[in-house]
Amino acid sequence: MASPAHEATGKKHQKKPASITEVIAAAADVVIARPLLMIAPVLLDCYYLLGWRITPGSTFDHLRSELMSRGTSSGDWISEQLGKASSVDLTGLAAFAVPSLFPDTNDKVYRPFARTAIALDNWGALMLAAVVMIGVSMFLFGFVGLWLADSGLNRTRTWDERARLGPVVGGRFLLMALLVAAMLLMLLAPFLFAMVVASGAEVSLESLVVSVGVLGFLALYVLFYFAPDSLLIDLAGPVQALRASSSVVRRNFGVTVLFVIVSIFISIGLADVWDRLATNAPGLAIAIVANAFVGCVLWIASLLFYSERSQVLASERAAPTGLRSIT
Image 1: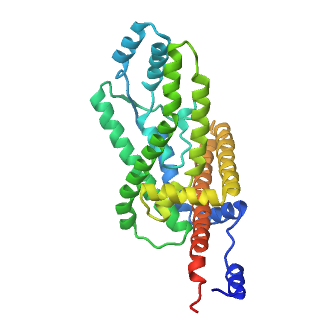
Image 2 (image 1 turned 120 degrees about the vertical axis):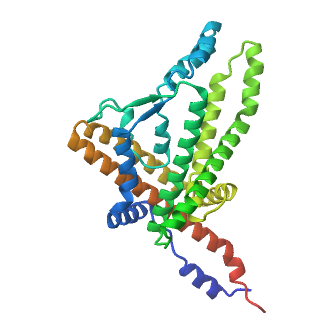
Image 3 (image 1 turned 180 degrees about the horizontal axis):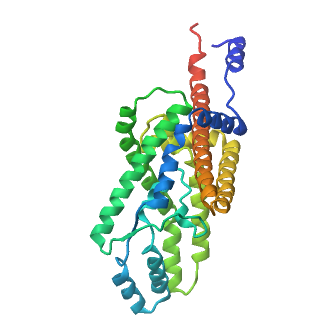
């Protein structure tokens, strides 16, 4: 068996993961040293200022009319939501893959030109546009994410390799999102069934189902928070990435929750600052660059946070085997 002195030496030389502030500071140093990392968010925001808006248009009009003719409260609610969805910009899907100010969502943001809207007005064009935008968004996630991960972790990878791996990582990210959505639905299935049964007895369980849904979403969000980072760092599959994130979060639960809270507060708090700043041309330019900087810093910080703790977890799992001696 391993001697106490050997075990003490192994623990002594085990690297302690950086704190939240140290990780964020290190990520900021990376972005400051390589300002070109901000180019993707900046270009995306420039598109949202000057590029085309692609909307469903009148695609849902027939369905809305059918729902409204039934005169039910649920039908009216769905019809109202479809009315709002008719003006949704499909190009906004890319903002979920790359940190973006997305100025088109705020009427107070300064716009030098009015964006041209393209209304699709039929289901075929809408489905095609949605598939294309999802594909573009997933490619951006993989390509930009690998670039940030390589920069933050000092890895050497060619642009051709990033372009080749980008669609692969993006596709895995999409599959992973579908898996998480399926988990949430499985969690809610018994409660949804109970709600349907209770509605026949005129008993409302909607508030209970909503509460369980919110709690379930928050639990899965925290548990799988680093799954996208695992895709980019480990090049893992969707299931392996979910397992890796779950292991790191369970091993470092307290500091992980704090990191998630800090990241969300920074994102939400500064988003309000950028909106107030972007009311004129100079303020808009500053807001776009500042938002790109903060977005890249938080993304790299998450990558570093996961990478360090994943390595520590792997070394802890390997320690019992590595410390055994032959007698």
